[in-house]
Image 1 (tube, rainbow, N blue to C red):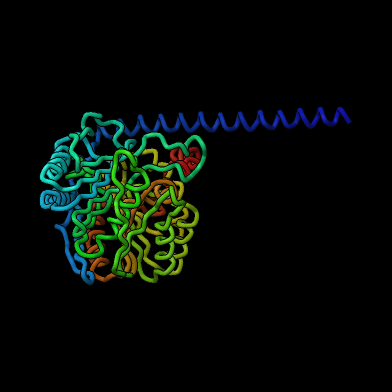
Image 2 (image 1 turned 90 degrees about the vertical axis):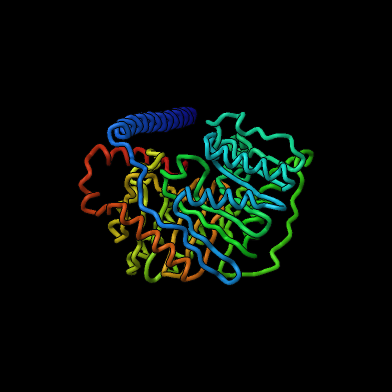
Length: 423
């Protein structure tokens, strides 16, 4: 029996060796592919830089019951509206941001927040450390004012080491609320680049439904404040119920991810059209299957993504999904001349969402995110109009074009596809 055990032991060691060799080989192939893609992309950007020019509309406003909603598709318009509200604040400001650049636009916001605190407004700032790791630390130092409170969301998340999903995730939200009267949310970070060279989408809401965004901020603040340094905010409850507008918040600390469920429900319900604009599109099997089923039952499914995003590796990890989608009748459009960073969808002229959540694993089941879900024909009409403008600045990728790509792109896609769950 001893020789059998020896054979089994040898076989186990051989299997472990083969598995280890396979993992190392895949890692080496992926590293080589990433290096090659980045080098080619740098060459492309030098030879054919994006102009940063794109068509856009003026902000559109409309009423949804007692709440006024404004849709922004150009950063310059959004920033002026946000700064105006900050300057008019009288009681409090909630400001939560993933990235705020150390540039003239970022300084305008910082100075406006400080001036608000000086005139007596309670200012609460929550900013992600990872998203701003490449900015000067000096820029994120604020004067020691009694009513100016700042949390830098932790750079190191212990869940990375422990594997606990409740202790993972970045604060990817972009929220601004003023005095319980006005709130902003969407894909726009703050910086000169985003002001006029990136296409994104944000909404402003004014009225009782601002609570939806305030509650999101309050929960986040109270989770990560230091009891000795930062005050606790009151969780007041809404007092009003409006089924036509609600904030969906992905919160890893609660193991809660409702945004994905909302997308799935809207896709499954749709009977006419689904139009998606997404900065980073790496769908999981469930979302991809739902989109394919919708297209097969005759729904006009369109997905608009950047022709070249600012994270080129994410583009390549996205591409392996194109074949199945195109074969099912899903239409894919590539946005040209600028980065499109929006995270939006509208369906059947009734349902729309705008927020911070990309269709990828990091956003859907990893980061702290927030999306507004809005039921209403006026919002859907505004979203459809914005999508039509974006279509005028894009080219359609047909199945025939896609199937004509060469051997090396196909190989790169196969090598990088396993990275999908990490992005």
